[in-house]
Image 1 (cartoon, rainbow, N blue to C red):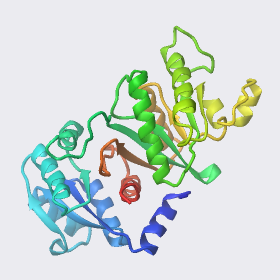
Image 2 (cartoon, helix red, strand yellow):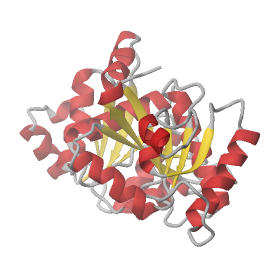
Image 3 (cartoon, rainbow, N blue to C red):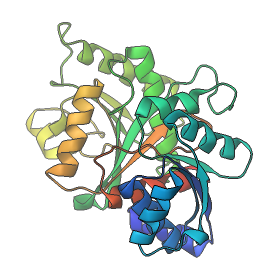
Image 4 (cartoon, helix red, strand yellow):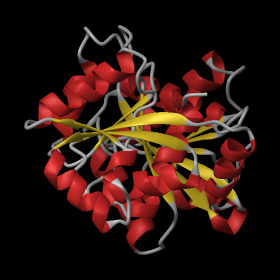
Length: 302
């Protein structure tokens, strides 16, 4: 089990694992800086797609020789995304990465049926992998960026995607907390109704893949056994949750950005549900967090 991004990096380097990342619209100084760092570290090769003149300028600014990179000209966002995906389909790259472009254009390329990356019946979902330094372990929060107001059926698929991600991180039996504002079912708060239903489904139908699921749980109960004890909640998930499933995109987005901007927790953004690893980070992610997203995506592809 990986307990930190450093352990991910060490595993890849020790085992000589290196993947090729195709960065769509690579004229993105932050994304390009993260990819350069990953290439220098030795965990990836890079193909850069976009405004060649601007990409070369940024490479030189970073102290890199443009001749060391494969650079492909593209003058449109969607075209760049399609080219990155085509390289993966053709076996010339392993992971497409979003650069300076609208998320919608990147996702349309991933979802293009002709690419064959997206199995019928799946759902695309985002998950943030956070390094919880106080306990020296990872936690996964989902979905913070793709599905806006998922119903209970969509939440089941989002959670199943997160379970697969947890397995890739070496968490064999992840505990799942379905979050809401309170820990009791209230028909006026739909997220509590959904959480109770989802906890039952996962405990009954996914028992071989997870530890335990609980919900509804308020955030304090999910992450603190002491808080749960104070409220009279008796569940092994409390204080030991590996996956936090948020009620909707707004709550998840605010929550994760609060953790990164106020608490400065190390994080990696992932896109789940496709048959290939995908790097799709926020425009405001730091170069460090974008690098952690690259590491996580390489691990997901193993």
